[in-house]
Image 1 (tube, rainbow, N blue to C red):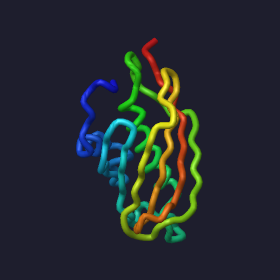
Image 2: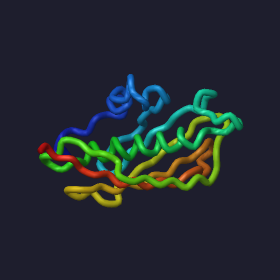
Image 3: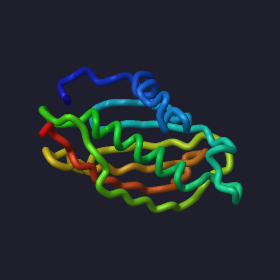
Image 4: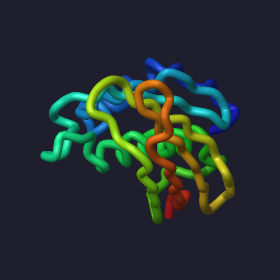
Length: 140
């Protein structure tokens, strides 16, 4: 798939409509080989009862961004992928504004991919570090 034309950020955003990314309001803002950027607006539905952005909202933003990157970098013959491991370190949170994510591949092999992401809060303050490992799936 790397030789196929890269979808636009709007096309990536539309791909998530009707699924969790759409429900969260996740928007893609940049797509190029080896770099995806996305964002979401903090709103009450994404908050934990303590008044801070729920960690699961942050993980969903980072995991989706890395997952779409994986999808765009599948080797020839692969039909999909699935997450086999993810880790997040939360360094801060947000109560309002726009939270952004930037994801880059660390490894794009035939059977696995590893992606790193940084999530930043309003003003660009680092909120979370994220890493996921994806298993590349082939038809049986």
